[in-house]
Length: 59
Image (cartoon, rainbow, N blue to C red):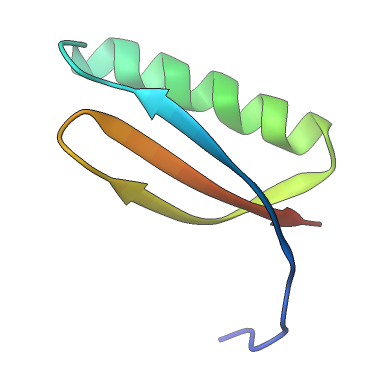
């Protein structure tokens, strides 16, 4: 397990309420591409009934 301390640089929120599994998958794939294109990485993903929270850190 990597114990390096990283600075959280942002949170990306994806609203998944009333979406199909296929639509959610496409939204998450797009979000991952966007995050990587900005030189960031996803530290964690948290969920609620209506949202996905992508916790972002510098790469």
